[in-house]
Length: 368
Image 1 (cartoon, helix red, strand yellow):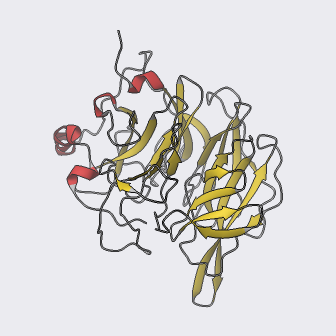
Image 2: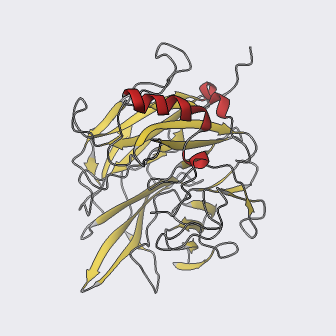
Image 3: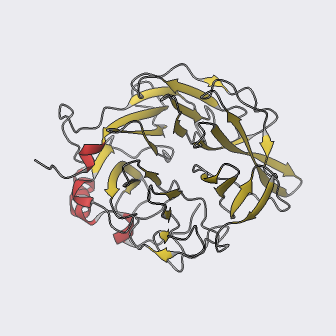
C-alpha cells in the first residue's frame, strides 16, 4: 500500500544479494540461520492458530501481567470477527483462539494492539463501508483493563472525511493518558480520548501506515519511507527511509537508514534497554516475493543498524504466502517475540499464524 523506491540497495541487504542470487539460480532459498541448538538461536515457529486466508494481519502485545495476546482474522478480506489467542508462558504455548465479542456488524480490516502505560490494552481495527460507488473504512477500537479478558464497548474514532485508506496496522503511540498518535494510511493524527476528537500530529505531515515509536530517551522514530506519504500510493518521491524527531514530532530529520517498505512494510520495537529492533522482510531479487524475516538492533535511535549481527528468524525455503505482516514485542529483559502468518497450504498443518522467540543477545556482539 505504500509507494517505495525500487532501489536494490534498500530492497535487499547488500550482504545477501550475491548469496541469494545464487540461491535463486540453483533453486536454493534457505537463508542462513544460527543453529537451533545454539543458545542464541531463534526458536522454530510455534503455531498459534490455523487460518483460512485473506487479510489475516495479526496484532501482538505483551499485557502488563506478562501474558502475550495475539489477535487476527481467521478468514480475511472482510472477516466478521477478530480472534484472540493468549500465551501465559512467553509464547511457548497458546490458548485456543476465541472471538472478541464486542465487535459486531463489521466487515473487518485488522488493526493493532497497544498496551498503555496504565496497563490498559487498546485493540484497533477498521470497518469496511460501502454505499453505491463510495467505499470507505471507519476506524474503531475497544479497551481492556484486565489483560484482554473482557473488553469495553466499541468506540468509533470521529472523522468528517473517512476514506478507503482510513486504517492502521501498527500500535498507537501514547503521548499521555488521553492523547494517542494514530498512524492511519491516509493521515497521521492525535486522538484525544477524553474529548473524543482528532487534531493534527506534530508538523501535520502524513507518515502513512507505518510504525511510529518513542525510545526510552524520548526520541520519536517514524518508519515513513517518504517525507510526505501520498494517498493512495503513487510515484515515489522525497525518499527519507525513516524520520527522527527530538521535539515530539514538531520537526523531523531524515534517517536514510531503513530498508525497502513493501506492501507489508516492517515493524519497529523500542526496547526498555534503550535500543530499537527493526523487523524487516527480505525480498527476492527482482521480485516482490517475501523470502525471510530478519531482526536487527539500533543503539542510536535508528540512525544506524547493527547489520553484522542481524538474525534471520524465519526462512521457509520458499516465498512466504500472504505477506505475513510480522510484529515483534519484548517479552522480557532477554527475549523478543515475533508474530506472523503464512498461508502456504503445503506446510505442516496448512495456513496458520506463527510465533518465534528470539534471544536479544543474538542481535548483539559477543562481549566475551
